[in-house]
Image: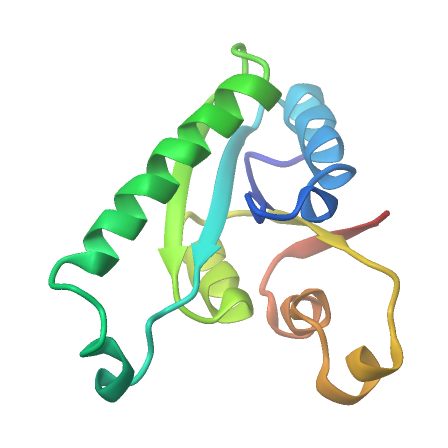
Length: 142
């Protein structure tokens, strides 16, 4: 049923992937799907802010996150699953949606914490992905 599954992980917050990654693994194994593991690095933003960082800072950060993502996959994803490592940069939900389209994913697996009042007012990343994704989205609650 699924050929390409996108799972999102925040390498700095275990709660973002603790329940979602095992679900994505099970789906990938069940359907023989490829797993696209995505982590998103926030953008430095305005050039006014960017000028305070050393030259080449963003490249070094992306390389460091790429290394961390490869290490994460080696530790948490079985070696018999085909995996693509993806480090995105920008607004989390926008990057998730862009990567899902770019990789032609037919399922996005995303972790979500319990909604708080602020989430109802602002809309969490998971809710935005669910509203705007062109494919199925599985939200895995902690």
